[in-house]
Length: 215
Image (cartoon, rainbow, N blue to C red; front, side, top):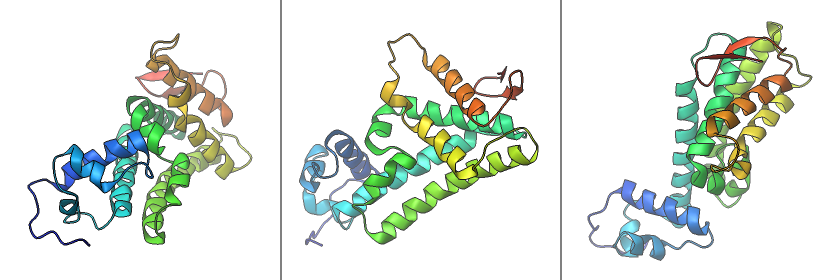
């Protein structure tokens, strides 16, 4: 670690915010600690009081995104039956992607984040992968409960879960805020597509993205 005899008055959170913005705009390889420091008016050595390296700073940014994403989805899901819980999960996933489009396009919060992990050390990869696996386990548990109760039908749990997550993950790529669909309409269509993909029959009522709905 470079010698920095006295830390400048800037918080870890402020450095992380500036770094995240830089990573979003320029990517990992296009971002230097010097550019992050310049953005918030500090010297590069001051960053080392909070982060040991650019990799550690990038890891912290990815971790923050993952925790924010998973926390948002969890706080949005409270239904008891598995069909409604799946609908709420998809709705929350899509909502986060649309409301955090810049972050989503840069990092991709679940399956899309995998290529970014390749540049991190094994310990950092393991920690981030653990958060991702927690999300997938919760989704698979919902699918499994639905299948046991006869409400959902699919041949393979893992394939079903990853298909749903991948569909949600890239909604920010095609959604146009000024296009024919509103965000709410896009979300509704995504929920219905996800439910149909796992065999939810026409006419089944569920609690979803705003109140109740049915296929």
